[in-house]
Length: 79
Image (tube, rainbow, N blue to C red; front, top):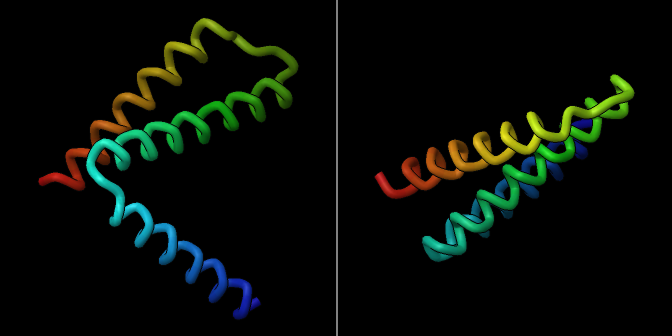
């Protein structure tokens, strides 16, 4: 178990180093793509668990959440 946690920690460190090396516009694009991917994955899990999906509210929420999260991450990086 300890080896698994160590490997996970090393992967997260590598990912953080990769994000730090990106230019500003690349960072924003990567942050937006990551946030959108996570939210869409959550939407899929919820749709599978409940048996239905409200596409209109999901699209609105996904766009709003992605924009807010990307703006926050960009602000946090550039402050």
